[in-house]
Amino acid sequence: MPRPRHTLDARPPRITHVYGTSLKWTKVPQKTFLTPETAMQLRAEGYTMALTRSGWRSSRSISLIRYVQRIHPSSELP
Image: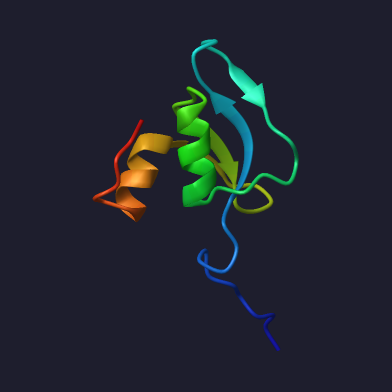
């Protein structure tokens, strides 16, 4: 019997590093997940990109501005 699969909506990807005004990737605490609230908070702190992991070997960089615009198209960004 195959094991059950979860959709990405059930568990957001985990953020491992963020990129911002220091012009380098900075590690974040281990249990930080990419949610609209987290993305808005990181944008307010001056970060622009997030490196996320959603599986054992899959990682990708995500623009925080585009992520928030995709989730909340009418929201005001700082």
